[in-house]
Length: 137
Image 1 (cartoon, one colour):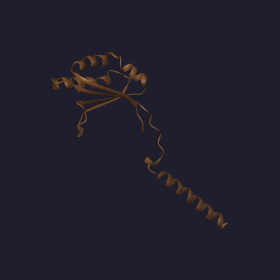
Image 2: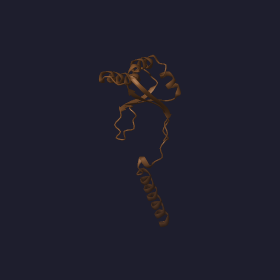
Image 3: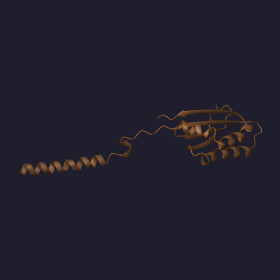
C-alpha cells in the first residue's frame, strides 16, 4: 500500500510540474498562426522642379485622406527619403497602401476619390514608380 500511495504522490507531482512547465513557455516560443498575406501598393514620387512646399503638403494630405474615403484601404503609411546611400534617383516620397486582396485594389484604382487625387498630383509629379506585391514572411 505504501508503494501505491508513493506512486500516486509521485504521479501528482509529475502532473503539476508538467503543467507548470507548459504554462511557463513564453508566448513567443509557442507556435504562431501564419499571418495572412496582404497586397501592398507602393507609390514613389519625384516632384517637378518648382513644386512648392505648400503643393507637396497638399499632396501628402490628399494621399493620406484617401484611406477615409475608400473602404478597401486596410492600412496607409508614408514617409520621405532619409537614406544616406544617395540612390533615390530623385524620388523623395514613398507611400504604402495596403489592401486585403486584388478586389480591394481594383475598387481603389478607378474610385472617384483616387482619380481626384491623381488630378491633384499629376501636374506636380516629374516621375512616379508604382510596385504592387504580396507580403512574404
